[in-house]
Image (cartoon, rainbow, N blue to C red; front, top):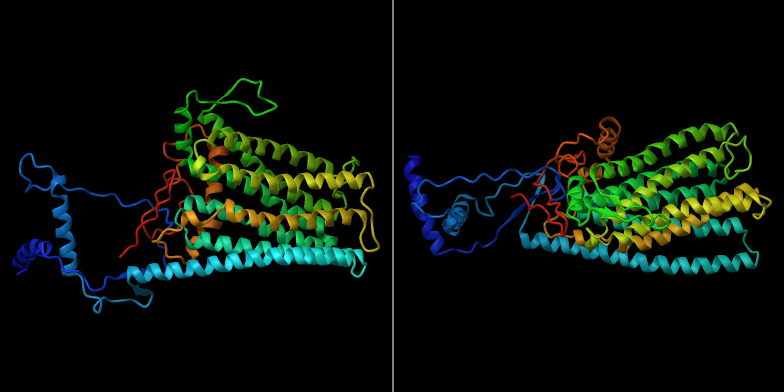
Length: 489
């Protein structure tokens, strides 16, 4: 009995194509517990079968429109109506129009809240700054309390503004290979702001707190390197695009511009990658070494003149390490900035460089000023504590300014695609905080040395970044405009 029914349905298909009936309401079933975009699993291969019924010399493309119409008619005839569509407890049924309206409404609300808090935060910052200066000049409030209030306001504003930005990136997680590194970089602002405010409030333990804070800086530098790599399409694509240059060389930046141009090869890429990884690994190790030295009074922050103090030695090692890492980052940026000009890498590089430059060199400057007794002490604060407190206060203000700059530098609007579910779930957060890609890169550089990397291993699809539970086809990671995966029906 099944064969005659199949013949009838096949015969009825052309009729339906001749007189198409517009459905009254189409539905899309969106799972609440699964992501609809940003999944790294590779898409299923498309199997193309040849039709033996084609006449000799007839090209399959000539029947594409008819086959598509038959398929649509067959699905429409066999699928249940809107009233008969079963919906599980974990699913919500909505039409595509309703889905788009819901996403757009949520986007408008979040966007307006972001703008409102942005304007209010600037007004509060200016008002609080003027009030603090007046109270300090009239000696109504102590300088420590005034600076703590201003720093707290800046830290609070920077955390909220960065939180809004990360929330929008996670909502529209349409290009996970780029947004994963963007979210990790954005975390630098709240980490630095909260840590600096706590160090200013608990100034007796500020040295310990600041040492732990500076560890994340090395992680951010490497994340920016990975972000530039993802813009280019992965390690393999970087080498291919280098070889396409005429010639595939890079002129050294000043003051090394008189040297012979550098040949851009895979070996050079592996060298830069290793120099960036060494800082990311060495910096936490120096932190672990520094903590017991602080409690045994062998490490005194800012004391560079005493040979018995461990600060000078650790600061020297860290300075050499960060110099090698940042130099590698500069070279890689110069070699790829023209390849990814549409991504505006210069603004992003300036934002990263500003944080690294300010956090390191202002600490050195304050240490030199304290060494020459140019920083006074007070009744409650020693000169060393004033030095550390000034650094924390300035960082709180700087992090607020950086959170304002990040709104345009790491904008989320290019990733706002219509078929994203605009919701945050555990898979997205897990993908951001998962460090499997760092472990993979470390093994590749240390164990393998980057010499025998298999073809395609450095591309985003095949790297250890693919750690989200598969839910939908993967996002197209070609350089240019991002494309999100379609919704599953």
